[in-house]
Length: 433
Image 1 (cartoon, rainbow, N blue to C red):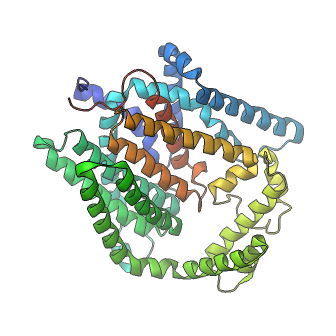
Image 2: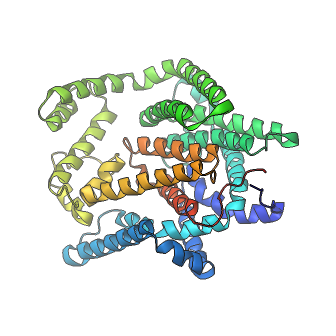
């Protein structure tokens, strides 16, 4: 398969910039990605109308449009009939943009590597500017990047780590690690990956640490079953070395920061497994003096969310959920962000909302696999999509990242990728002949 004609540098920089802005939420917590998303959707509807019509006829696009319409109707009903606005309910209509942005992504696919390169370079600069090595050496929290919360910074650092690793793999797979570009690419990629790991440790987000550990295991499984030939052994060896190095260097730091939480979590799990009422086990942990205050607050939020969801398990409460929240056991807790993305969905949209997420996610994974098997997507790109998705879905088990800029931009990009991969024209990733 022949390689597309390389665009000129000024043109590549110009047309890759919008994609850099959408993905920049992992570096800078802002709403800029929303405006670019709207622009892409308008460009697709106006300039790429035949492609939009074609994509919009497939069942997954119809499902996205139907879901968005359902969210609008349900939100309007809650406002007009009950006077309840909820919080951030409009975020759940975002699937309406997935097919439209997917069309734009396919049309501008030749600029995506340039966008990824800019993102890695900018991430490296941001890490160098914001990492406080003196504070890190003292063992205190030193969150990097430009986020409103250290946990968000930890999530972003993890996404940057995976992006830089797979950017290096893609560069090697497509022949860019040959000739004069080899050493600059290696230097930038390795430096970004290393500093992002430092940023993860400094952010003191125990949920991110757990998500990254699970992702390392997932990467090992991915190497065994996804890669073949000369890629498998070097990748597995590098993964083992990296894992052992991270564990050795970070364990004393992790034990100091998270030791009490790990012990309390272990006690809670044992109590819940041996109890006929897991919710009561959670409440006993809340009352225990040995439970750290941060964990106690999280458990109160989870307990409230479970109480609320039990009243409407099939379709949730919509924007009426705050009314029910006031009746929960711990309604005086300091804030109402549940810190679990799945419960955020379940409280609002019940089993129906979780089913929508599951259908789209499994369909997307299947389409990536089909594209990879047919040679339309490189192994490194497919691996990146799998890995960053696995990591993100792990992080929302301990934080409501789907309600943040970093989560919204992730879903827009992954949703758009699903439709770009199945556009039915030519391959999205073009390999050297």
